[in-house]
Length: 308
Image (tube, rainbow, N blue to C red; front, side):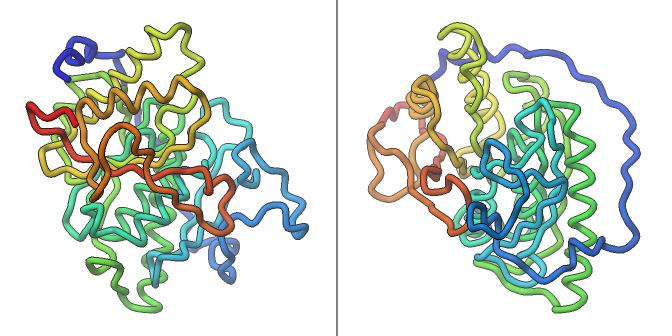
């Protein structure tokens, strides 16, 4: 596992810029309408075009978690229709992870006062759900252009949660009371050692479909280096008790190499899981496109000297 360290050189430099974020003084009508179950495509009731993810191409998507309750059950996410980056729209992996967090928050270490970081956060849905359940979350993505949208989503959902909380009072979710969390949106390039170390370690590291799109990098050596940079970042952001929670849908054979490398540094946090033959947990969710092929993986750091 220690051979990965030399590959963790800073990927590139970033820069900050002031952002002016608009937050409506009252929730828009689409955000307060009667609840509907998440994403129900192909049932003949909607003419909304769908993205390649199977999720309707609407600027705003209402996400209602079946596992949630009270103020942590309904969320509104702005998408960037036609955006060039994969993080500009919702993907099924992020919806599945959000649903699972709502159902198993304490199992994943997400309780009031805990710390979490999301890698490849995109529009911020997963981070927003974790923060609603009380975690202090850092939502990171390498794409600087998507950060203003993620920040708008964070602020909008804070307002919606405040409204829901004032109407129904706080509701308990598995392991703790909802609320009192926060989301800090930041840029983070995988493999940037200095940036990862500056953030410190977290109780939970979250990610959905993180290795999607790696076939756009030319050559297996470059692909493996990108995997190594991601794994090194995960390692730097974790400690021995950190829970690493990932959702993943297989798309390209090369992605299997990522999990082989993952096993060198982390071990399953699931009773009875052993060996690289373990392929995660199926987590189909009614109404979510592709969720039947999305797998859940939970890991912890592998102790020195243990290789599985």
